[in-house]
Length: 196
Image (tube, rainbow, N blue to C red; front, side, top):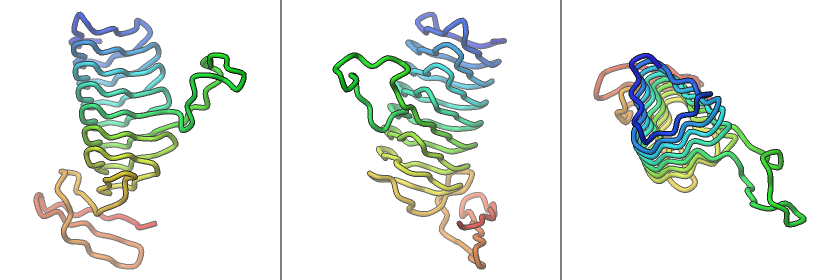
């Protein structure tokens, strides 16, 4: 926790790991065995469930909920009020009307790969992967995997094009067989992809 800033109103478990220079703001809750990497910023009211893994240089904006089973790689941006869920068929009670306990849940996994962005108010369902430098538009519901550098939005979120690592929408593609070359109009970077 070297040089980390943890606001007095934040509730960070003693069993959580917080990297150097992290900033954890008002009313955050970081549960046991969660791991927050170096240089991360957790905005006001962020909830990080137990055993969640957050890489380095990640920004999680106000009032996000990141539930057990999520793995967030380095350089990810998660906009305000986004929710990464972990159960596609949640119930509060069992078949015999008893309250479900932690062992009664069938949780799924979410992976958000390096440099990806999730827009404000988006909901990510379990058993999905958001690819490297992909961008999810605000208010989207992600129900299936999103590929590397793909721009996806809607309910359910669907691919609408490609984005550069800098965030600009790609307007020029070069195709050669299963290979795509993305040419960024903003920074000029060329990115090679293999289309599945």
